[in-house]
Length: 111
Image (cartoon, rainbow, N blue to C red; front, top):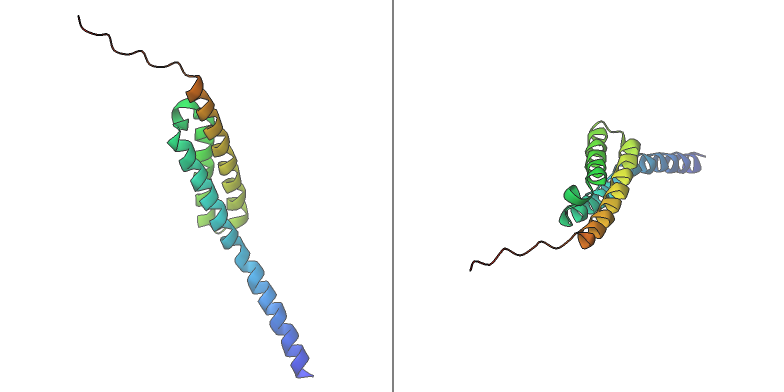
C-alpha cells in the first residue's frame, strides 16, 4: 500500500512546487514584454509626443519591478501589463503626432 500512497504524495508535492514557480516565470515574460514596449515607445520619442502615456508606462514598469522585489508577482504581472498597454498607446500616439507635426522650416539662406 505504500507504493500508490507515495506516488500520490509525490504528485501532490510536484504540482504544488510547479504552481509556486509559475509566478516568477510569468513575471519575467510580462516584464520583458513591458520593457520592449517602453523601448519601442522611446524610439519614436513618446516622451515628447505623448507625455501622459509615456509617464504612465514608465511609472507602471517601475512599480512592477518594485513589487516584484517584494515577491508579489501577481501584482507585478498586473503592473507589467498596464505598463505594456500604456507604452503601446504612447507609441501609437507618438507615431501619429510625429506624422502630423509640421515640417521644420529650413534655415534662411544668406544673400
